[in-house]
Image (cartoon, rainbow, N blue to C red):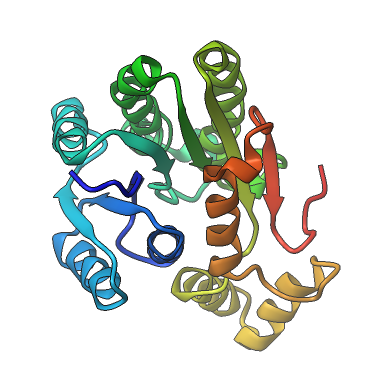
Length: 257
């Protein structure tokens, strides 16, 4: 086994997850990358390797309890897991709550909340045994304010606040820290799709919608994915040894509470 610390990242194949993987690798961590898309995970693992790091790919569907159990087993075969980053999440359906069906609701909860629960549950025993570890959950500004037409997503992200704070209280006695990051409008393909869809629905130019998003920020810009990743590195490090149960805003000031 390597003497480098090991971090597990879910949703590591794209966007914020990819940036988190590259940043943690640069900070000296070996990685276990989890998601449903094997090709995307292998591409990120290749980038890590090209930069001198080490990453293993474990295809995982967080909706399946057995998959998460297998992820924990395979990760812990590589070494003690020091850091768990619960980054996986789906957008869920759009529409009024009374128009949604149960399957849409349950799928959003299964990935965004239950998947985090399963990962925490299966990785915590090893952390408790060693009396150390850092769990970092990736939430959203929608965990702090409503989002019209997106009740399942908003509910799931608000649920992560309660999960993070309560788990921090429960696990603190074992030297384990649990924190949440709340990103805002993160630059990248996902927000560009949102901008395009809103522009089409409103019959305006995408630049107008993007300007509205940027105007919500005191910095007049979107959040960069690498800014979220750098915060993960900080929370994973000894520099954050006194921080647990926190909800850290990384959203260019769109939300300040």
